[in-house]
Length: 308
Image 1 (cartoon, rainbow, N blue to C red):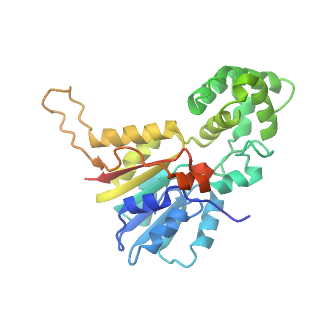
Image 2 (cartoon, rainbow, N blue to C red):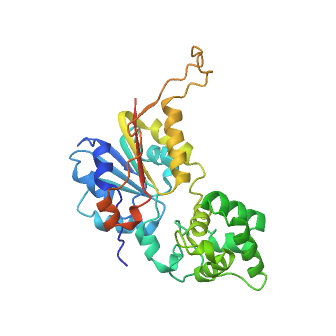
Image 3 (cartoon, one colour):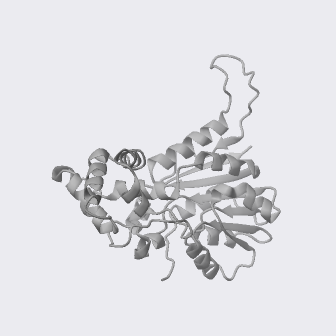
């Protein structure tokens, strides 16, 4: 299957990166290669390090970008940025992009089990080598653990009912497919609440996916590590798709821009100096036109910071 992925906020992200033709850039989430391609078009002597934890994305990226020689492909997690760069003998880079959404390809590849619109085994692993999947969360977590995941990562107000219904249903037998889970969620949410808003399973599926792939775990630390490996004036651009990720990005940038821990109205004695300047005071969101042509961009937010 062709790895298709419409890059969100592409033009804006590339503009904000201020690409230098001879610079070294990192695409921490290669995905469909849209951002990578636009960076490569602007490089002459520079190079790109393209990282993805999904081997299918790496294969597809190599195919899409086969005309470019100045790319290094790394099948790894961007959270290991320091080890990755060290293994390549790279000390500092000029810019980093992260697109934290699930790619259209992952959603469309039915057997990956990311979508609540298609029936498939409960999987949701971004890294196929991982042994832990959505099946384990749904069938092995206690009711309390399920409720916590669905409430915290899905921001789902019916979390306790959904968790209770899942546990009750699995007493009859294993829950193996996405449609089985969708049916349970629909039964747990009162009909009046199901009629308005997004698909009733959307938040729960998001929550389980985040849990399976540890998407939020260590994200703040990863951003700090990435800022550390940026050269002065280098920029980091991060696209998020839900409020939990966006909050982590926003707060990490804020902390790096104003790291002083001294009480307000007192002279600073902690000696902590700002590390970045936030370039996007408010997050950049897609235009009306982009949302019309790519509905998945609706919830996207771009935040950019520059290393001092």
